[in-house]
Amino acid sequence: MKFRLEKDITLFQKKLQHWYANHQRDLPWRCNPTLYKTVVSEFMLQQTQVDTVLPYFHRWILNFPDFDSIARAKEEVIVKNWEGLGYYSRARNLHRVARILTSNEKIPSRAKEWEQYPGIGPYTAAAISSISFHYPAAVLDGNVIRILTRLTADATLFKDNNFAIRKLTPLANKLLDVLNPGTHNQAMMELGATVCMRSKPRCSVCPVNSFCSAGKRGDRDQFPRFTAKPTQRLKINRVWIQRNGALLLHKASSKAKRLADFYELPSAEGFVKNPMRKDRLVIKKRGISNQYIEERIYRVKSNAKITQLVRSSPDLHWIPASKMDAIILSGPHRRWINEIIAD
Ligand code: SF4
Image 1 (tube, rainbow, N blue to C red):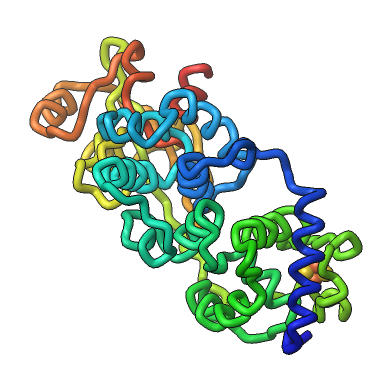
Image 2: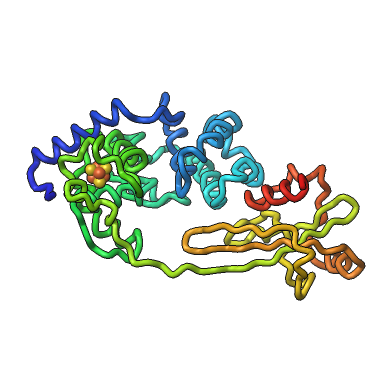
């Protein structure tokens, strides 16, 4: 389907927005929307599903009702409140954004201005500026890439999302309803999340199915096309060492790229050369992007050598059970520790 005629585009926008008005999910950031709710929700929704975000969003708004309350808080308090949601650089960036906004006299309204803020890329900038300021910038992420490539049956083999975004930006801009950019963008996001899903898209109830080439041909599952990335397999051995009711944990440096200041179970390196199967407590498997990670946790008895090692390593700490809730643990490690203790 080529969107060459103005009347086709207008009809597309009308059908999409009419559907959105009647079928949008009841989400807390859409009820009495404010710039604050939009910014927080867009940060939380980066790489994360709506269902996962919902409880965090409710709790966040209670603890931090506005930008001022975030700006006043210490960074560790902000990160602690984000615990379990993952991708913690988002929490630190949201903190920085709140501090900049509360010290600025003027709140930006254009997408390019929002892109200057920490942690805000073109997608988030387009979402914030269009929803809160009616600024005409089209959102383009994985969901929208899927919709656009299916609408046009675009069989390009993309190297990654960035390549797809570069190719599809002109089409996304052409389809954007510049008079109602916020509604249009939210409708596109909603369509990708609830109708034009990755698997089993619901074409029979899709409001724009009359425009959709792949939907008509029945090969919508073939789009979008990406070159397959090889899966990386990683194995990590970790240790479970207790002493006087305290558990040994490793704290990442505050300058670490990932998980700065977070506690995790220490890696086995330095504690045990060849961990024995009989000492294995659990094996945990998880996938992150194209990585498949297997983590094995081994029980190791505390001894004088370990006590000495901990004394001379500023990043190793004995954490008593009573303090476990107060520290910032990565989501999977908190879960595993609770499971092992419960066992
Ligand atoms: Fe997606 Fe199907 Fe709608 Fe096409 S018709 S946009 S494939 S849900």
